[in-house]
Length: 189
Image 1 (cartoon, helix red, strand yellow):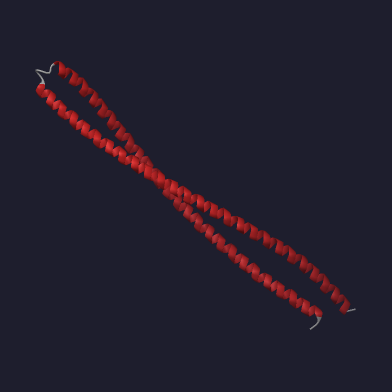
Image 2: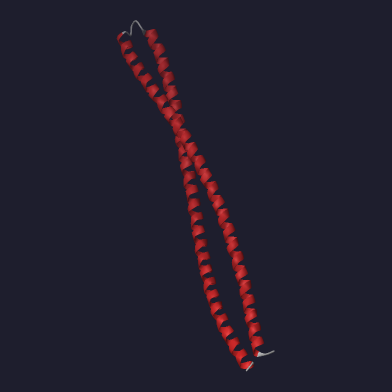
């Protein structure tokens, strides 16, 4: 085996090793792309969940508005009852039976107001729970974005290393071809 054959064999071995390295890098890049696609799917699912939460919040707001309307009606009824009670006090002797009946109505209204207050407290607890869940989802999204940014930076660094390696290989190949050419010139003179 001549020196040029040995040199050529070394070059081929190195090129073969570099080809294997490049293949591993390509496979790694494909794996990262698959992971990015999976992360995007997770983000889409999170967005869908956020939309569902927003719809639920809108429904809760509608229910709160209805409850507020009921409270306003109850307040109006209470004001009317108070006016009626003032009139009843002026005619107390002759209208005691009517006053007892109105007191029953007031008690029913107060009972309804207690039920309404209980519903409002339950709704407030639900809204608080939704807020916590939304915060948790937001933290999850932030973590996923940080993870994607980190993987993107790693991939960019690896690609930059590959570019440098390819430039180095190209220069080495040109140098080796120059040496081979000179050796051929010397051998075939």
